Length: 610
Image 1 (cartoon, rainbow, N blue to C red):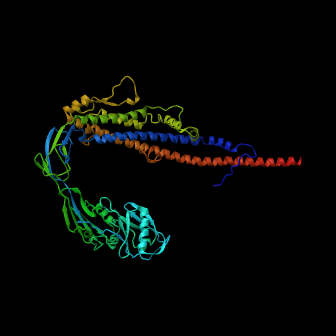
Image 2 (image 1 turned 180 degrees about the vertical axis):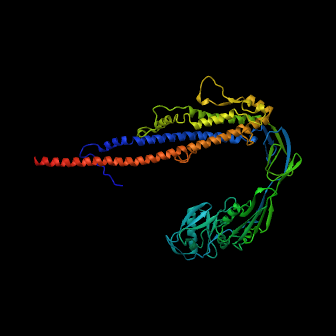
Image 3 (image 1 turned 90 degrees about the vertical axis):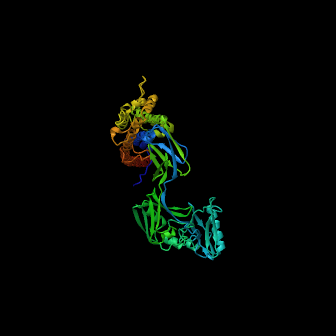
């Protein structure tokens, strides 16, 4: 792009910069209008996202309350923490005895003992080692989750003990004294030994290459570690002798079976333990393979509990032997067992449900008899209904406010020049005025409000006619007080005595009124319907204005696409304005040159007649 010389008015005496600036103000009016239009849309998006946040909060409340277990009007208590109880449907007050003799468990096959040869020892006698700056003076060491670059002091023909001392000095500088001990064995080989924690557990230590040959110069290899390194290949682990039981073969077929699901996993020397674990866990066997670094054991675990779970392991190579699990291992899960009211029961999980009560089994005891008491709890329903009313009214309050606001005359988005002349506080006050009324009579908000209000008058089929509507249990629209308040229109209130009477008369009907979820619209409970409506409203809001904290120029949303298009137009117009400004300076520059020439001519003529 050509550089335009911007000559000031030396010849004409005119303030060229001021003239161009004034001319450009007029030229910038169209782009200022585009920016103001973009700001208005941005403010609209902000206001819609504010509604989005409130709807999300309402949906969260409804998500919790829509289940029948939250509206039973009953409470259950256990005499022991060994069992947790909860009524999941309306039932009568009662007392039960429970004994848990066995918990359900997974089928598990684990290493017989720790599988790793712990230690990090070099393979080279380091006597006479030379460290050259910029060549082999840097290595990386990872201690637990911290990686540090270790730089050794250059020197020729280090003795083994001097190199040990130098490495210890640099390691202490990087990690702190006493965290990682550098040793020297009888063969002149360097060793690393991490400091154990208070629980006796020694963290992982690994070495990594930075400068080619630096690790090998000290006798170590890239990825070599003190503990088992799950990301190293089986070949590397075998070469480093990391398996206490040895690894006779790095290739083979591992067969993992759980019940009728059986998968075969081919592995070779280039595979890592992490890769093999991932293959097992992603397979259809229904088995999880995991490594316990504290106890240094591998475990194959069924993904579900119960006696029907069976884990069988077979291996044609040396992997299972290295993991200290016998090929042909076959283990089963267990069912939970016990007595409820002196009647034996079993369950494939540690959750057992009977007669509207769910028992969560936490601990087994052959001698402990637990007493479970189920009693009426109308307060729980009343409290939950109050949560609904508060959340509903909060949402309606904001929707009403935005729908009823009207634009304030004389307030438009500020231009850049206007903002430059105002304080930050004044800008905020002005922008707050501009936002007022931007959602006035919004069709999205009107539809949202109407869809929620329609549920307030719904009659739920399949519920006793005496209690099949909100009005019948004491939930009604607020009465008009004689003073019109826009924000209060459509809010609801509770006649608590009427609700309590309904609960006492027919708690099952009250439960179904709120939580019935048969999949048939006419039988859908009020709280279930409110949850679904909230989801629908959120979808509309996201489609219009995007998600909270989402990109402002998200072209998949209605307002985001408008902002994106306006931004593109503004960029295009700014390019044109820049060219226009250059044009003005060119014209004034030409004028200045003409005046300068004229002044020179007049000066010459004057000198001739002087």
